[in-house]
Length: 406
Image 1 (tube, rainbow, N blue to C red):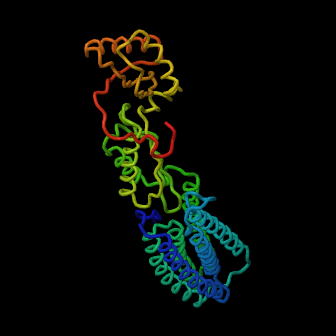
Image 2 (cartoon, rainbow, N blue to C red):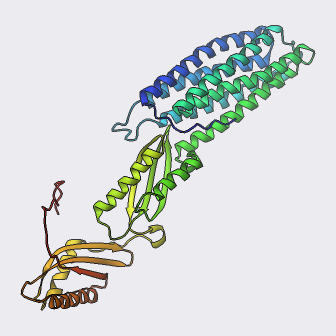
C-alpha cells in the first residue's frame, strides 16, 4: 500500500477544488448509507466485527466532511495573512483524518475486548454476512474512484481519504472471515476479527499521521527523493552557475517551494547575477510541476566552505579613501567609476580613471601602476586593484531607471 501521490498536476485551484469536492461528496453519501446499513446489520446480526466496520464508515464520513472543508479553504489564493497560499489546510485535513482513524481503532479494540467479557456470545447471522460482502465491493469501487482523482489533482488529503476507503474494504474482509467462522461455531472469531480491523486502521492512521507531521514541519523527506534530485540537477545545469549549496525544498499542501544558493563568477555585475538567478527560477518552474515559489540567492563563494563574507566599507567610503592616493599623479583624474568586489579574503577594486590628453600613454600607465600599488599598500583590506582608462563612451546611462539613488 503506497499513498504517495504522483507528480503534481497543473490543474488550476478551482479545478482541483471541484474535483476534490466531487470525490468527497461521493464518499460522504456512500459512507452515510454504509454507516447506517452496517451498524444496523451489526446490531441485528449480532456481529461486533460489523459494528466495528460501521464505526469505520462513520469515521470515513466525518473524514469526507473534513476534506470538503479543507479543500474549500485551500482553494483560496495567497493573501496578506497567508502570503504563500492556503495549501497546508489540506495537510491539516490529512492530520485530522489520521487522528480520526486512530480514535476509531481504539474504540473498536475497546468494543472487541468488551465482547470477550460476555458470558455467552450469540453467533453472527446472515444479515451481517450480506452487509460485509456489499461493503467490500462498494468500498473497493469508492477507493479506485477517489484515488484516481487524488492522484490527478495531487491532493494528499484526497489520497489519504482514498486509502481510508481501501482500509475499510480490507478490514471488512477480516470481518467477513470472523462472521463466517462465528456462524459455524467459533463465536470468538468475530471480536478477534474486530481487533484485526483495529490493527489495520491503526497502522494506516500512524502512516498518515507521520506524513502530515513531515509536511507541517517542513521536513526534507516530505519531498520525494526523485524530485529533490531533479531540482538539484536543473539548478546545476543552468548556464554560468558554478556550484549549488543550501538547497531546500518544502511542501505547502500540493505545492512545492524552493530556496537555493548558487555560486557565480565573483566579478559579474549585479544585473548579470540577477539574470542567472532568473534563469534558475524559470528552469525550475518549467521543470518541476507544482512548484509555486523559488528564492534564488546569488553568492560569489560557497559560504558553507569559506564562511560569511566580512562587512567591508561600502563604495562611497572607498572612494573617499582613494582620493589621497592620487596626490602627485597629475596625469590621472579622480575615479570616474568604482566597482568593488567583496570576498572573504578582502576587496578587489575595478577603477575607471581618466587620463590627461597632454601626457603619453606610457606616462598614464606608469602613474596608474603607482596608484594601484599605493591603494593596496595603504589599505590592507584591499587585496587587488584593476585600473582601466576609458577610451570612448556612447549611449545614455540609466542608473536611476528604478528611481533608486546611485
